[in-house]
Length: 218
Image (cartoon, one colour):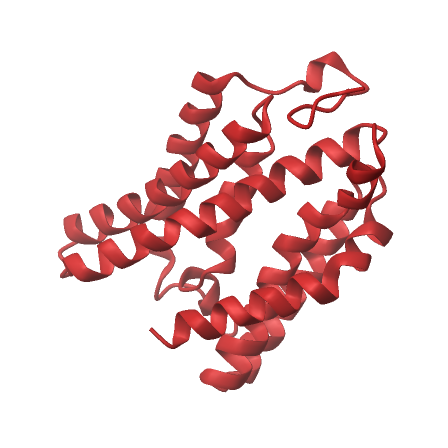
C-alpha cells in the first residue's frame, strides 16, 4: 500500500524531481510566464487578448510544475512559488518597460498566489500521478480526474463569470470555453482520464465560479 504522499508509477523515469529541482523549475517557469504576459498584453488579437490578462492562463504553469515533485506536499509549495514568481516577473517587467506599478496591486496578486498556487499545484500533482499509476486505494480511485478537472474548470468559470456575466465580452467567453475544451482533451490523454475528468467537472466548475465571483467582489 502506497502512502498518501506518493503513488507507485509505471516508469521509474517519471518519479519526479526532488525539492530543489522542482523549486528551480517553479521559479524559472513562473518568472518567464510573467515576463511573457507583460509583453503579450496589447499584442494578442481579438478574441484572444484575454489570455494575457486573466487568471486561468496563469494557473497553467503552477499546474504543470505541480506535477513534477515526488511528494504531494512539495507540489503545494512549488505551485505557490510559481504563482508568486509570475506576479514578480510580470510587475518587474512592467516597471522596466516604464509602466506604473501600484504596490497595492502587487500585494493583492501575491495574496491571490497562495490559494491559486495551492490549488493548481495540488491539481497538477493529482492529475499526473493518478493518470500514471493504478490507484492503490478506493480513495485514490475517487480522486482520479479531479486534478485535471480543476484546471478545465478554471477556464470555464472565467469564461462564464468574468467574460460572459461581468464584462459581457462574448468573443472572449467563447475563446476561454474553447481553451477549456482543448485543456480537457490534452489532460485526458494522460492515463485515459477523459471520463474521470468529466465526472468532476460540475462540482469543480461550480466551485470555481464561486471563487471568481468572490474575486470580482473585491
